[in-house]
Image 1 (cartoon, rainbow, N blue to C red):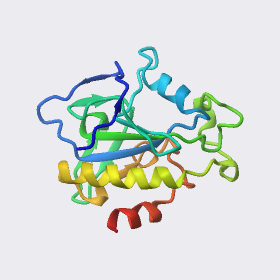
Image 2 (cartoon, rainbow, N blue to C red):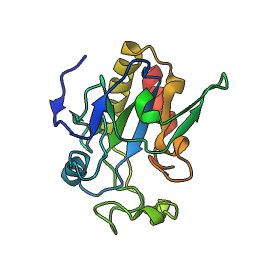
Image 3 (spheres, helix red, strand yellow):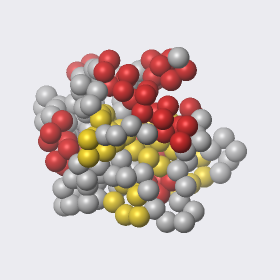
Image 4 (tube, rainbow, N blue to C red):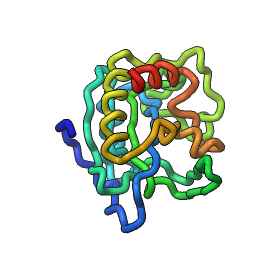
Length: 183
């Protein structure tokens, strides 16, 4: 495993017996500034965090150790191809936040109010960077090997909480990511 810059978040808890890692959830911050996003993810008042943060330059910061549960998914649910359904996915996943303003960063630099997330203007979305895709693919390959996960275990926040979340958004290029993963 690669050593990453560390910026510990207090927004975590120990992973309990039986809480095995079964998914990797991809997020986008929808914030205009990487430092502001990192401050939010490490502020105890927000009660949100992630395992890894990838800034726009492809630098990786680890906020929560994989042995701990990060608070990233909120009310969430996933049904596996075999029909098994899990709820409360923080306990069964790793999380990766991608620094990206999405369709809101210019208007809401600290992220959109929750009620606006369901009405985005995707034509205004900030593109994800090549450095982010490259770093993300490298990180995901490592996580998949170490946790014995298949590519199908990589999901969007919007897929596990569709009534509440839109990230990482339609401007995230899943085809590019899968091509990099399979290269």
